[in-house]
Image (cartoon, rainbow, N blue to C red):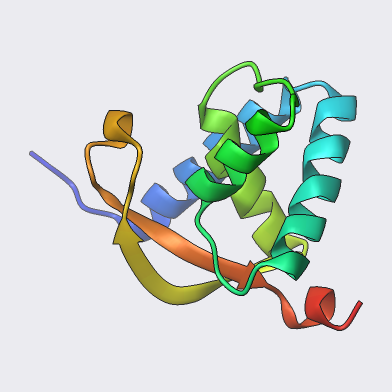
Amino acid sequence: MIVLDRQLSLRLRDLGCAQTLLVEPAAWKAWAMAKLRVYAAEHRAFTAEQFRVDFLSRGNPNPHTHKVWGALFKHADRQKVIEHTGRYKCAASPRTHGHRVAIWRASAANRAT
């Protein structure tokens, strides 16, 4: 039997994000969060893949797994660095196969700084 449980699904997502970030070096997380804060303040709206491309094109290292990017954005959302606009667009990366991705912006607190 297939069980649909939205609350369980969200708890498992949050647990996975926490575990993914837990094993990423603290220095990388702090650096990436600082860069995300600046990027968000400088861009009206953006996707995680746009930030990732900018971050990596500046010579910054990749995290240990691609799953860190989603976890980083979830953490930044909880920390009020960014907020979801409620909009989505198709991903531009061919490896993403055009699935819908969230559009983010700086949180009100981050826009005020």
